[in-house]
Image (cartoon, rainbow, N blue to C red; front, side, top):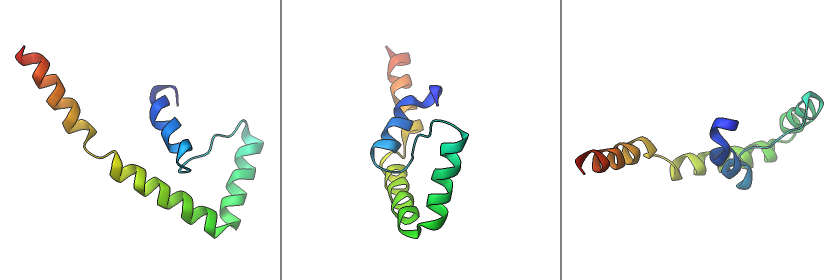
Length: 71
């Protein structure tokens, strides 16, 4: 996640992702999500909201680069 710290942090903050410390914690988190349909649904909904709110980043970046190149 070092290349995507901001994205990862925002996903965690809205409940679309979870940080785990080690393989044992990953297994525990995975099993919890497998067993808990509500938690899975909430996480999926949060991820979908995040995705919608963050669409267009490439177009915005290209527009900013174009402005810089015109200067």
